[in-house]
View 1 (cartoon, rainbow, N blue to C red):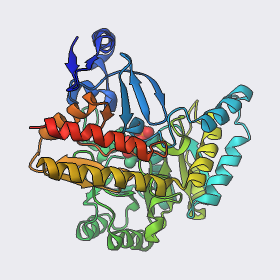
View 2 (cartoon, rainbow, N blue to C red):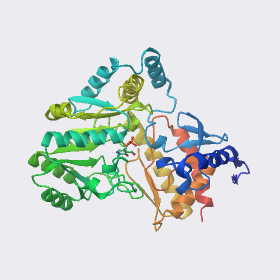
View 3 (tube, rainbow, N blue to C red):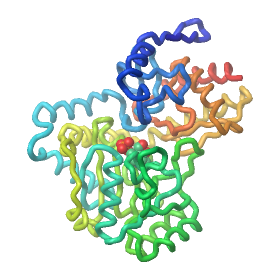
View 4 (cartoon, rainbow, N blue to C red):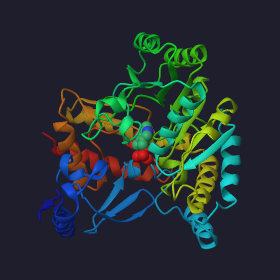
Amino acid sequence: MYSSSIEDGVAKTMERDSELRERAAQVIPGGMYGHMSVLRRMPPEYPQYFERAEGCHLWDVDGNEYIDYMCSYGPMIAGYANPRIRAAADAQRAQLDIANAPAPVIVELAERLVKQISHADWAVFAKNGNDATTICVMCARACADQPVILVANGAYHGAQPWANYMSKGTPKEDHQHFLPYQFNNIESLDEAASKAHGRLAGIIVSAFRHDAGHHQELTDLQFAKRVREICDREGAALILDDVRAGLRLSLDASWSALGIHPDLSAWGKGIANGEPLAAVLGNDFYREAMTKIFVTGSFWYQAAPMAAAIETLNVLSEQNGPQLMERLGQQLRSGLYEQAQRHGHGIIQSGPPQMPTLMFEDDPKAEKGIAFCGLAVKEGVYLHPWHNMFLSTAHTENEIEKTLEATDRAFRQLS
Ligand SMILES: Cc1ncc(COP(=O)(O)O)c(C=O)c1O
């Protein structure tokens, strides 16, 4: 067990968290796994367990409160326990959630998405973002009857073996038909496309370059145009992975602002404000191919998350969600910039304000970032030192101001 003292004298205890970590070490390999294994890489001040969440606030199991800028790594977009979205899910759950066939809400949600997302003529649903990206890959291959998919180096499209370049248990043969290119680099894209000529089924792109541990890069228009041109020329699918950025940059697909429409898009995370739901949207050209692939899951037709998704779309449209999150993110970004300057720390902020990344200059191992985030979390603000963060429509100007008071103290303590 450890406790850390906050400058104003209020001690933050983590007794219950420590106890749970010890118990988990016995029954969960590594104590935790995947992106929830914060223990391994985050500063020790980070709680491993939370007990309550509301709006943009989290409470850990020892009662410490945080203003949250990770939003469950994206799914929370309109506030934890959003009363409207929760009520919609609960009402559907009370009536029917899963059965031998879906509830009508599956049609209503598909209609709603087809109306809202410009490139979409149809929708299918699943649970996780990796289901959605995998369905896109299969559908593209089924349509072209070709195997090769171009994937940007370092981009994350899920932890399933074809997309997983980080771990053991994924032999290189699993990546045999996936050729790399550099995001935003037309030359490397052209080169990969020429290698795949005659065998190309699709090009998968992220909404922008949001690889963890890197400064983010917004999508270059000329690059996006070239992706579209190659797909048109080769009869391949432009697959937009909007799992992470979807509904934060736009209420349409994220490349709509560039005027580039994908053939297939993958959605997850925020679309049901934390209820488990993913979606694949496609245009008419890919409709038949979608009927030719067999993809399914026991929980994929669950109705409550679909009801939550419709209400999430309503809430975000009414609030003008992307603009609201952009404004709040900008307020945070400007405040952090001013503070870093004043306290003599060089920081680099990248990505769209709705999904900001904060890193320090000359900090290749993120040591300074980790120290800063450790100080911030002690002050009640949950940030991330190398992954993009997330704003939500539940953040307010007032909460950003409180955040900045905390980060000011954190910057001051940072050596
Ligand atoms: C861009 C992107 N695609 C796909 C995924 C996979 O989504 P999930 O974790 O829901 O399987 C993620 C998850 O972080 C993601 O950020």
